Image (cartoon, rainbow, N blue to C red; front, side):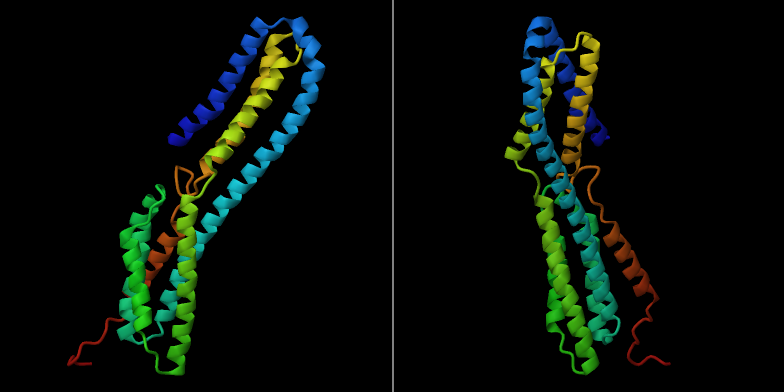
Length: 267
């Protein structure tokens, strides 16, 4: 619901303001004055419009790239977590079982707690504790055979990759366009639309239509930037689908594993 209100506020508000502006200009400024300044306004709007088009296109591409990288980082973290779980299946039960439980616990805290906190640029202490638990278990392992050492080295490599992905994910949750860039985008859009007020179109409704379309196009780009500017915030945020899928997969695998043998039990 919020995204629709944001769209109405940015796109609808921008178009309404532009139509109000052209209405006031047509009421307060004579058509003869506008005809005299149309050649100058045409030259200026070509320069201003080109510069602004480059600026807003760069902002949209940069913001979208930032959003896509945030999604890729989140998916990579989940994939690394799943790989560590798979490597752990070849380990001895004494090392495998606590590690697998720690991996599942970490994935759950990320989905259930940390993901919502990232909307505010925060980390979850529960996730950090679960993450540290995985490192503690890995650091306490002492593989003795070549096979165990190979599994351990592969698992450690993936854990390092997961750590990098986690750190990048948190950084992406805190990034976005700064206040200066937003001021430049909004001010540039207002100036570009404002120049269109001084063109000469004898039928006012035609000029209002063209100005409204121009304002709608500019505001649509600003709306797009606003929605994806913070990848982990809002209704269009990156969702923890990959992590949720991996957690469900690990829990399913764990439920199918044979229960550890109890000392003294009969075969």
